[in-house]
Length: 144
Image (cartoon, rainbow, N blue to C red; front, side, top):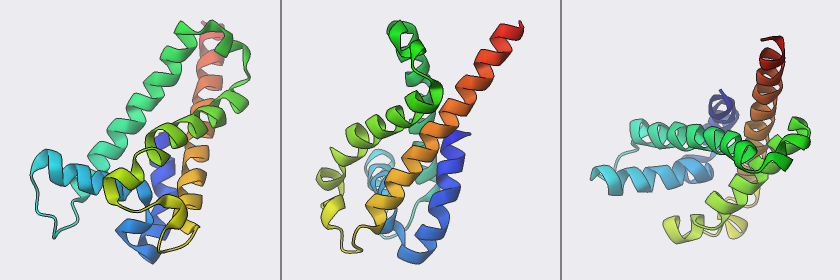
């Protein structure tokens, strides 16, 4: 769900800027070409979205695993924890590898600051969506 909402946010910007304007999609395009030995002359939406949703799913498992292994995280309200986790993922998995993978510095992007801003906003939506899920899981567990 969280990755789906993030993706919905990114679609209008993809239509405006193309593939390089959506940092995560651009990375996943390059990874799809390498992993699946695909032609670099085509956009591979199957690979892009497979990796996008795989990463998002693993990220969702990661926050729950973090809450189990680091119990102090459960003391942080989900509406704070979720966006902080989205920020952490944005820094660790995007800002650290985008330039190495694509050759484009997200802060010196040919399209300006728009792509990095959309990426940040997407990760905040992702984190807030995880927070909503956590809050609903907590209420379901307490009702059980």
